[in-house]
Structure formats: C-alpha cells, structure tokens
Image (tube, rainbow, N blue to C red; front, side, top):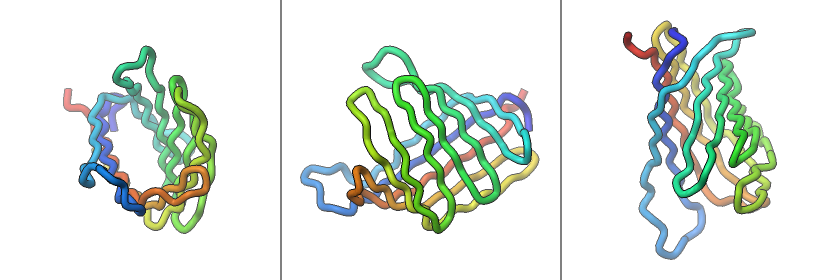
Length: 147
C-alpha cells in the first residue's frame, strides 16, 4: 500500500437506554486523507481531526493488528482505546469538557488486509463512567490513493 491513503470511518451507535429526543441511529462518517505505514507486523494510519467550533485539532493514530485495534488521540482530546475480541478494555478519555472513564467490550472484530486496502469491522458495547450507554459498530476502510 502507498504512504498516502484515503481513510473512511463509519460509526453507528444503538442507544441501550431510551433517550428522549434522541436522533434516529444515523451513522457518523468521516472521510479524510491519511498517512499509512507498516512496522513490526502492524498497520498504522495517522490523520488529523478538526473539531467544529473549537480551535486546534486532534491527532489520531490507528494501529491495526490481526486481533487488536488501537485508536490513540492527542490534542483537544486524549485517549488510548483498545479493541480486542471478547475482552473489556477501560481507558481515560480526556475531552475539553472533562474526563470520562470509557470501557469497550468488543463482541466481534474482523480485519481484512489486501495489497490495496484494509477493512476493519468492530462491534462493541460502550460504557461511560461504568454505565452501559450504547452498542456500537465501527467500519474502517483504508485504501491507497490513486496517483
């Protein structure tokens, strides 16, 4: 795969509690240029995330192995989230609005790697401050930019 890639991330949250006035379960989608490299049997994708209405940005590093997905954020938000099938991982998530204790219980994870693209699917339960708040899906597609 080339160093310059296009990253597409889709996230869908299914509320586990009835939220009054909650939006229908609309997926959130981000498509952004990113940098890719492969080191020590792991795939890395690095990209910047702009937060509407806030100065500064979030630097993201995604590390993909066959059985583990890690998302590291620094800048406006700071965290190191780990997704491993059939495991619960807990991390501190620092935001401009305060800190949260976030837990992810990964129910299913699939990683498909080819010469030209990487596809990652993760299904997990999300806990915030020890309360289950949603069942979530992440779809991540990384493909080489055509030059």
